[in-house]
Each structure stands twice: as structure tokens, then as C-alpha cells.
Image: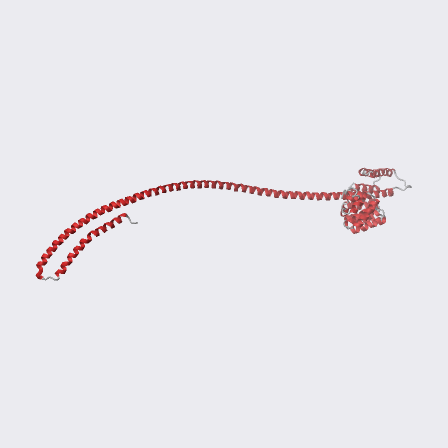
Length: 434
């Protein structure tokens, strides 16, 4: 930037040059003329030359004096010019300074106002920024708290989910246990029903054999009996009366009392075996049957009772051998073939069991137990028509088989058959027992 003092210096130099230029030019002109004269003069004109030189020197002195005066005038002029220029410069600078000061003041005022606005805006912005930072910190803290709570909730949810899953597992286990218990209960009920039906059938079979035993055990009219035999016979008769009233414990007590009078009577031991069998004391029933066989090896009913006790104890192969031995003793006894068929059925040999039941029916065409047992085998073999035919015959011979068939496990495959329901009377009772 060009400063004002530079401008002033340039102006003063210009004024000095203008003042000095005429004097310098005159001096140069005067000095050039003697040179031209000296070239045409000769030595004779020397005095004139000297006088002219002297005149010139005087003229030069006058010129010098004039130049001096002129220079002094110029210097005075320069001085006044300098003063004027300085004044002008001062005025200009002052004016400029004033102008600049005025405008600078306004600008400074504006700058200050702008600065104040900027500072105010900055302060406001800073305050807002601080407030925003504070809010951001609060938001961050809230977010951290929310995250922590969310983490705790997630952990609690995870624990709850794990607990729910564990509960589901436990519930599943409980449900499985309940289902298992229900199945076991159902199987137990079926086994109980089967055992009850088997016991009922056994009771009927035993009762039928007892009737035959009573006939066979009667002494011959011409045979004399001792007092002990008479007392034993009385106890057996009272035991049979209790038997007919289904009081098997009392009947057994009478048979035991009879043994005190006739301990070697095979029929008394056989009656004990019958009573013990109905009371489901099969071990004792087997022992009583063995005792009867030891006293009378060819007693059919004792071998048959032994087979029944072995079968009830689950010794099916031994029971089959005992049944075969009973048939060998008396092949015409339909009860022996019935027993053999039941043992074979227990072994799962259903076709052979059917043959045994067929043989029993051949020996007694009205043997209702054989028809009922054979109907059960046909049902297990899914031979519906034959099963329904044999069951109808058994019910025809004894209506109690209709009620027995409702709960008989062997007839489960027939329970959805309308003919079966009609046959056993379920239609009349609204499907009870199905």
C-alpha cells in the first residue's frame, strides 16, 4: 500500500525540478558561445577575449547571483509549496482520517454490534449446546438405564423362558406320567377284569367239578364208615353249603376241620384245592392238589386242579403238561380239554387252543364255557363271524355270558360291531361298557 509520505516526497522533487530547469539551461547556453568564438579568434584578439571573458565572468557572476536569487525564490516557493502540500496533506490526511474515523467508527460500531451479536449468538449457541450436551448426557444416561433395564428384562425373560421351558418339560413329564399311569390303570383294569372273568369262569368250572366230585366221593351204600369218616363227611357237607353261598373262607375252614378226622382222604384235599384256588391262594391250591394226587395218582380232578393252579401261577408249560396228564388219566372228560385249551391260549398258541375247545364241545355239545372260550380265541384271531356265533351259543346256554362279554378283553376287537353290541345287550343300555 502506497503511504502518504511517499506522495509528498515525489511532489517536492517535481517542484524542485521545475524551478531549476531555466537556470541550468541559460548557463549551458552561455558556456557554449565562447567555445565557438575562441575557434575564430587568433592571438591578436586576445585582449578583447580577456575583456570579453571578464565581461562574461561578470555576466556569470550576475547570472550566478540571479540563479542564487532564483534558487532562493525556488526554495521559498518549494518551502511554501511544501507548507501548502503539507497543509493539504494534513487536511487530506485529516479529512481522510476523519472520514476513516467516521466510517471506521460506524464500522467499528457495526463490528462491535456484530461482535456483540456474535457473542450473544455464541453464548446462546454455547448455552444451547451445553443444554443439548446435558440433555444428550441425560438421554445417554436414560438410554443406558433403559439398556440396563432392557438387559435385566431380557435376562428375566430368558430366565422366565427357561423356567417356562423347564415347566413345559415338567408338564410334559407329568402328562407323560399321567398318560402312562392312565395306560397302566387301563391295563390294570383290563387285567383285573380278565382276572375277574377268569375267576368267575374258574369258579363255574370248579363248581361243576365239585358237583361231580360230590357224586364220586359219596361212599357206597353198602360200605360201612367209621365215626371219623362220618364226622369228616359232616364237615365237608357244611363246607359245601358255605361254598354254595360263596363263603369260601368258611368252606375252607370246614374242609380243614374234616382233615383232622380223615387226613388221608384225597377228596378232602381236593376240596381244599378248589377252595384255595377260588381264594386265589394258588401256591396252597397246588400243594393241596399234589397231596391229593399222592394219595390217589389217577384222580382226574386232582390233576386238573393242579393244571389250573400252575396256569394261575404263570407256569404255563408245567400247566400244559398237567393238563395232558389229566387227559391221559381220563380222555373223555370235557373239562380236561377245556383246561388244556385255556393253557394253550395263555401260551399264545391260539390255533391249538381252538382244537382243544373243539374237542371239549364234541364231548359235551352244551358245554357253555367251551363255547365262550372258543369265541374269545376267534375274536383274538379276528374271526368275527365265528366269534359272534360261539358267543351267541354261550349266551343262549347261559345269559350271564352276555354280561361277562361286555368286559372281556378277548372281545375288544368286537366292541365296534353292532351285532356284538346287540348280542351282549349294549344297545338296550345305551352302549354301557363299550
